[in-house]
Image 1 (cartoon, helix red, strand yellow):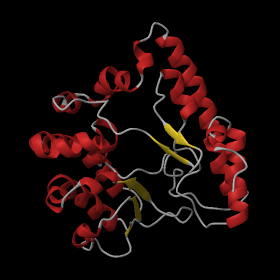
Image 2 (cartoon, rainbow, N blue to C red):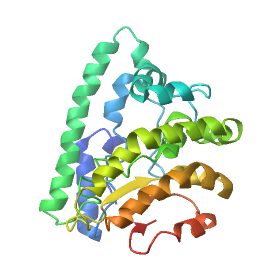
Image 3 (cartoon, rainbow, N blue to C red):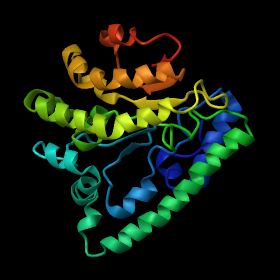
Length: 275
């Protein structure tokens, strides 16, 4: 429906906003997963991340699947200090601008672009809330902006960001103990404190949002039932137990067929999970 090409709109926030507003005024949906803030290419381009595959002919945007951010022998380093690993290893591999002589200026430019992007994203959220009276996906924003992320889910981080789909699929076979060790460390140091904070908070769903928490579990497409049971479910089920205990509603974004995992999800009490 948009008069603009995708490559054109992604580089112009006014055109991008008009595309979204026109769409809503025509179709008037009750809610949206995100407000076109999923791929902020104006922020990442200055740092050298230019491997997006943008196709105007079918309005699609993708990135190649390759394990650029983490090698298969770096699980221990990631577990030891994730923030340090991201800045010293992952980001320089993803953004070649970190290795350039003008890296600081590139980072400064990217930071300025991020402020513009953040202003655009905030404009989209406030417009939908105040002018169109459309609730956000979760209390803190849409799926990308805040999105009230469900605590913890490390296997998605490995599959989508650090190792890529192919790398993670190989690691589940070659380095299962490393994945489990990382999951355990992440659960004990990050997830459990978050769950305790939720336990001490208010019960019931937020009346002004579609869901209370949301997450994405793209990695499930490449998992067998045994792998799902081994690498994902032991760390996801305790999270959902707390969500049910506090009467929260959780949304999980999933691509592909997950019918083979249905018996696991059926263990979750009804009224707390949307797939």
